[in-house]
Image (tube, rainbow, N blue to C red; front, side, top):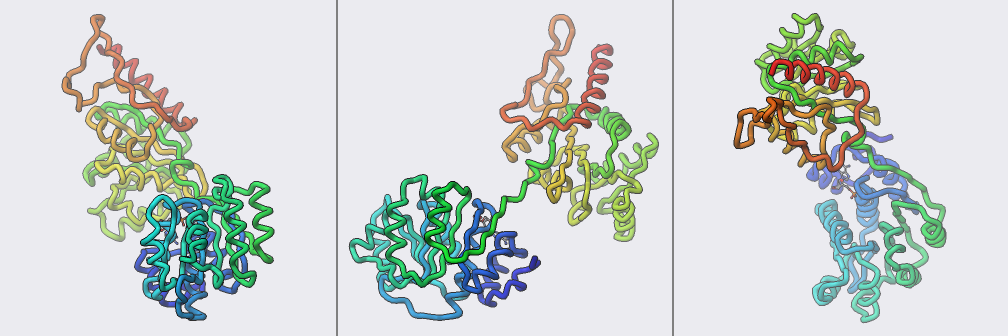
Length: 432
Ligand code: AMP
């Protein structure tokens, strides 16, 4: 599979726009489809939004139009794209403008629910690309404000959605109006029988490409939180590291000082670890990383800055010894595990002062981390920072976090930490 856009034989004008968009590598559907679309072949793509399918058809079509330049003819287009909804049509139009800006590509978008005058005006001189929803397109064709009889390239995007929305008759009418001699690209997220039969009537010897969106860390990483008083974090970590087989674990601390201290503490507890942070020399960091890669030791303590750019495969666990100030940092941290379709586990320690950070993380990722225990301390952010006692001297149950959509419990670590936390709670109660 090609590893960069320049391997795909796209024009330098298109490559320049891609570099400006910050696209470095083609997505799987782009890598598979672009060479064939460039060669003029029809395409049947089974892909959802988020896979990069828009660029998979837009980039080679811009190139195809550049390769055979032709001035625009009034009310006509060279490429016609049908989309089910105005939002999607608008996005496709914007993508053509962005990818085609150095190639001088002109594009117009037409959809229902708004006045037709500006849309008719945009079509007066003709355009390279017309993105349209079926109903409004037929309206404008009926009024002779748009003419699709010179279309060279036809794209149907989200064909299944168009069928669901009852556009089949409109689509058939439109297809009957475009020349038979054309290149057709057909995309659908699902493949019910009607989609298949529509595709069969429209495509000639198409290349079939099926892609699924890459799983995000939210799906491949089990994420949980352990509520633990600050001074007990070290003991909890030691228990966790000793209790479970963790082939490669990265422990994140917020500060360099914290990383060094934890390194010494683990050493005292007989746990072999390496540490990397900004005060270590380049040589020390490289050696620590190389050792960690070969699992000697299997534990790496890292600050966020030092962890940037670390590329180690098969990290089985991430432990957030401290929660980061920025919730986005949490997402970067857990992205170190569960890569390339493998599963991973992320365990976060949360002390009384870190509740608001936990909330910010859960808001960002739009779900709750699995609670391995209940906080035995009140969040410091509460107005009354002191522990409140019930009349019998027991700690009141602490407020539960939102449990709207808990993730699957990470089995082994959950058990080990829950047991450790349970022991701590019992000890804590005895001490009261
Ligand atoms: P789509 O599936 O076409 O809706 O694209 C999903 C998102 O991925 C859009 O925001 C695109 O801008 C972005 N995108 C598409 N191709 C690439 C790529 N090769 N590299 C980075 N981002 C991309």
